[in-house]
Amino acid sequence: MNATELRDKSVDQLREDLVTLKKEAFNLRFQQATGANENSARIRVVRRNVARVMTVLNEKANSAAE
View 1 (cartoon, rainbow, N blue to C red):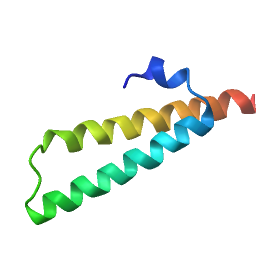
View 2: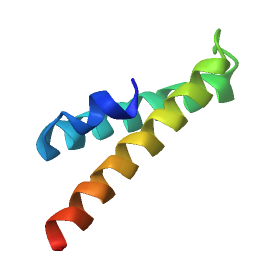
View 3: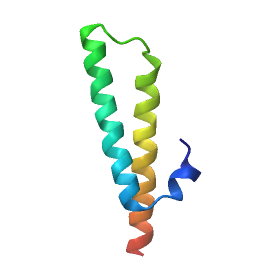
């Protein structure tokens, strides 16, 4: 998932993506705490994707406010 793909999505789609990514991040943290996590690098990828989605949402909000 890169920023150009995210900028093409609507705000509602971005919010849905954000919810699913946050759920995935929670599940990965839970797996890591219980020792069941097989791919620890996935946590980093999901956190960065959350940051990307939030950045694009903030950009869209700022451009709508102007």
